[in-house]
Image (cartoon, rainbow, N blue to C red; front, side, top):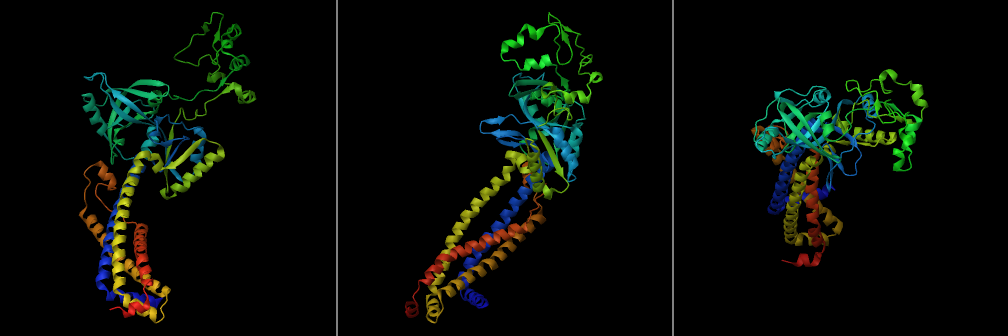
Length: 519
């Protein structure tokens, strides 16, 4: 083999013009690939960093959906479907608490709403916002890059909305009104059970250190207001005990049985202990200040656990989310070691399956939904462009090598005449293109790295928030991935070997006698 490579190097030196032509094509091609892949890796890193630090964390836990689930809800062909709620939330929280690889987690609800105000000039004008219903303390601990421009952040138990500054500007233009802290907004939510309207006070305006176009229309809102807008459960239910007569109603065979005289005799009482007389008059009167006063659901009259356990399942109604104080759609996790994200996702999903919990875990790309595809689209476009350039380069290199072989007919014929077999000739030309691809490939990569180094020193500044995300910061600092460099070099080597196939085939067809006798 060393002999083959020495012959290959000698041949490359003797045919300098063809060597330089093919080498230049290879060097320029891999230089462009090195710069392009570096910029794409930088954009991918920027998008990933932005979402993990501002919106999704490392992992998102949500319910099971037939369509694509993300932090923005369920995206389907027909539009946005209802987002599934997380089942058995307390069990999941207990499990997350038991893991020592999770740094912090926070529950969340997401939804859309239209916005209007009381004194806007055009009563029909509406703005839009995407709402993140959050638990303030854990959310602020997990996402600490929220800069409050006016007002304050949400406090636990506080009702209010926190608008993004960019969305504030859009709303003021749309509604033709100035918005400030303390103003009241009328939010209209849309759910599968109808339209819900709630008024909420603006408690502040914020800006993220790096925003994503589209998501900068988002607002932070208290959980209960968003639950009301989405017609979700506002809180956990208490345990209610039903007597035998009440459970019989659940087994009624037809609709009329529910309104029979037996169903409303004087001994009937509702689940909270309010009895009814023959005229269906409730007694005692309902106390709005203490809704459970005098009822069997009152804490003072709560049954012993032994009594509860002895009752049939049909006579117990309990809320699995009672520990949470309400329902949630997502749990966002931040890991102590982000490199273990894939492994942790697999472990969580395996636990959900083993426990029979209809939940799923996903990484930031799944959580970001359509926004995570930005880098993938750019990469796909770049790869298509690279394939087109590679195809053109393949044709040019093939033609150049073919011309070189035709000029070396006598040399090839002489080698064949003195005993060189087809395998030797094939190995010789393969060695030549391999050495050529590796040498000029490395030269091209060094040139590309030099250009990236110059860009890094110049410090190109991002012009807007989207470019800032693609730059992975306010100033472009290209990322160089060693594995990507190795892949680029392997691609160039593969192109060279492919371009060499047909010229080698032509060389093997040369007849030694004709080649030696040709002028």
